[in-house]
Length: 100
Image (cartoon, rainbow, N blue to C red; front, side, top):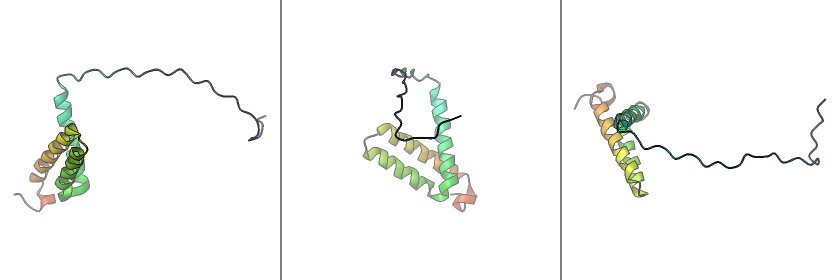
């Protein structure tokens, strides 16, 4: 039978495993540009699905936020996402109201 909870009863400290440092990440393989392009397109599609015609503005704001905090890589990534959003919207007249 289990004893009822008693807040005054002292508890034994649980042993924790010793800290193990995480292993460093391996360098990205040369084929990772293709994976990066897939990720950019996937993010662009999600922005278009969520924000519609406002997606380019959202991507531009994110790029500006990244640049403001000094994250050049993040800013470049969001600029690439913005370009992909423009490409997607150019091919979707149902969202933009017509082709340019």
